[in-house]
Image (tube, rainbow, N blue to C red; front, side, top):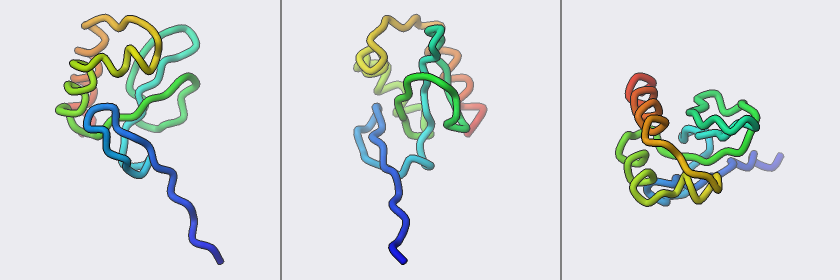
Length: 89
């Protein structure tokens, strides 16, 4: 038996490659809504961040979500994501 391959993803905040299950998916739905996807099953384009508010702030400051999703993201969306992340952790 071959050992199972662990899918790796890069955190947009710190840039580290980590196992997918350790990260939180940020998803842009087909309607254009951006939100945190704690289960990792929502439909849409996904990007990943660590489970820390510091990584979310770093990605926000460097506009990495905007580059990843090819769209402008309002500050209110970041505020909602920050509150969800601090509640979920």
